[in-house]
Length: 508
Image 1 (spheres, one colour):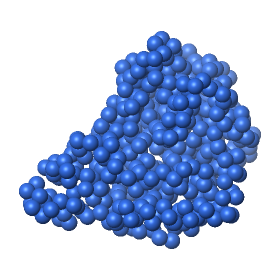
Image 2 (cartoon, helix red, strand yellow):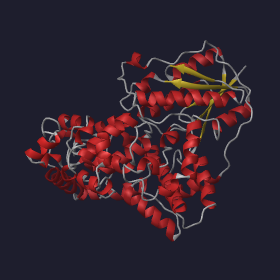
Image 3 (cartoon, one colour):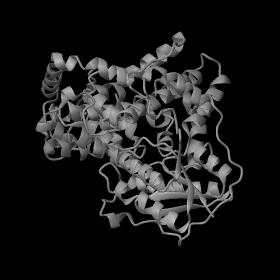
Image 4 (cartoon, rainbow, N blue to C red):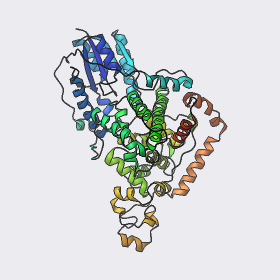
């Protein structure tokens, strides 16, 4: 019997799954998820993501079981698995969603396409969200995004299921790949069931604090929707989130806090796909500067000591180190604090965005390559089209954690430091250090650089490069390739969009 193979990738749901629906219409279906060792040994993957994935797959198994289907897990490289499967159980077609991933998955998909062509197997790839494959011009992108988000969701009632033609495999041992242990005790739980509950809680209750609450690390954990990992792994479809949000918005008074929160949230859902489209259109953004005029800007000056101080929460700047600890313990951080970490890395510490971006990617349970690498470059100043974004960690602490509650929560060593010295503890007089039990250089590190002068020098170097005629001349080509083409909007929506651009806050 020939097989309609559904290859689950980052679409871990049965609902609104075009690959599953169309395969079920064509014949008997085999549902498969392939655990790729090469992917999980890559520099941007981690055990926290692997464990989250396992929870998502367990939940997907139950949802497919309700449709009379079974999810099979196979460990191996994709082409090898397909070759083995096709030999034992001939494939009529392969069904999956399009993926905008890292360079490894990009090359893997090209290899799969070659394999399918060789064996004359039709590979049906379906649009996953607002991202468009082989987009010729950005001019029509916003219109196409809106059209896709308003189309009907996909449903499947019953599946004629097939079994895997070899014994069921067990979940692979993470440590067999010689990867480090990484189990944050407070990370979010994976799976569509939790995803739906999180979305509903946001739409019904928490959305009222979205506007004005997502910047501070104190309020952001509840003010943000917290659905980002479920979108990244496909437990929720972007289309169902947009439609559920629009439906809820239609029920609210237009001037209410909840309504304004959901308007801002909808705008950020649009920006979510806008940024992923950049990587889809130019995969090289993951490993080289978007604007080639910035090549060589930071690469020769890599400072391993500064890098280690940052990722080990030893910079001496309390808000920075508190954010790193929170990220280590939870796998999540709100956008403004993410941007601040990249800014500190890129300017006073003068670190190149790629190695630091690889480390950050491993920390985020919601790692989304399209958003991640575009933002790494934008915050580091290498896109050539964005305003220089520099976040002073002392000012950010004063603005968003004025009483030091966030810093003291994640950095217990500083709990007895007086408010007046909390964000600049290296300035404490010796008698204050002795009184609160925090000796600078022993209990708390000195910053690796003097913040103001190092930041000023970094900005001067960047702006000097930006002012070069050959660098300025390339800006228009990048705008044409990646710039937003916003459609006409109401005054209110323009204001929301302008605020989104200012904050860059498309994370949830």
